[in-house]
Image (cartoon, rainbow, N blue to C red; front, side, top):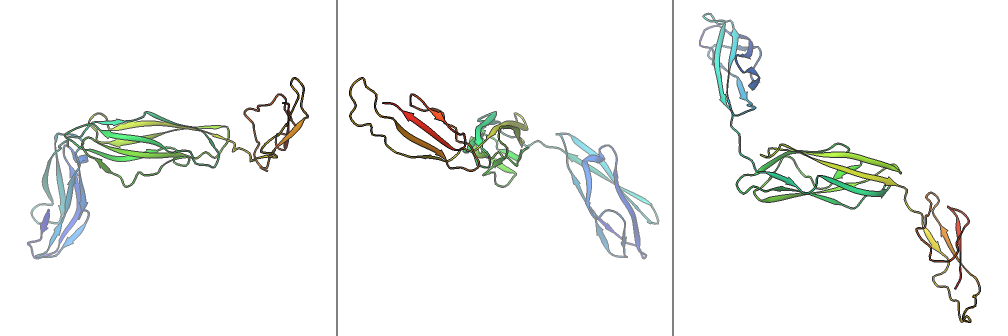
Length: 259
């Protein structure tokens, strides 16, 4: 809107504002406040309309000045909200479980697929937010907002990196969009930190018992399993021997195998 000063003296605009039935739907985005317009000059005021539903909204732009004939000029504001049709969204998983991951290491990548199942309308994804973005990350989100075309998909690759052992991490990822079947989709994310494994070293690759008389016992051979890590324990899940003697959780393990 343009205000002109057709007089011979400066026109003082002291204030501008919006009143009426729906003032919250309208705003002065530029040119508001107090201004001075010299004779034969103009001043622009820019108003914008932001509807929240598909209804008609009205308000009044009021301009206060030192005009000789009217101290307040009013301009009617009318706007009609329109809903842009959107497609329906589906997600491949309602939760992603990364399982146990050694601390300070990165998990395998898990993928979430967002699908627009509609054949006629696109979906606009406005934002994707991970509550715990320290331990869970999206590798390929790219710029937002983004559009998923009709009958198309967007794949998100996620990783988990714990920092504490014996700790379960639970958070969520929220997907905000204009989808017709729901503007918010929530995906639960979980993972657990564990101690990294030790470094195994084995003294021999092969134990040769040689020829042994049937039903008799061979000589005893020793296989030394060592943990070369200075920080983390080595825990064996199974030993295929008849007896096993563990001297130290962190040090040397002596295995005596009988034929």
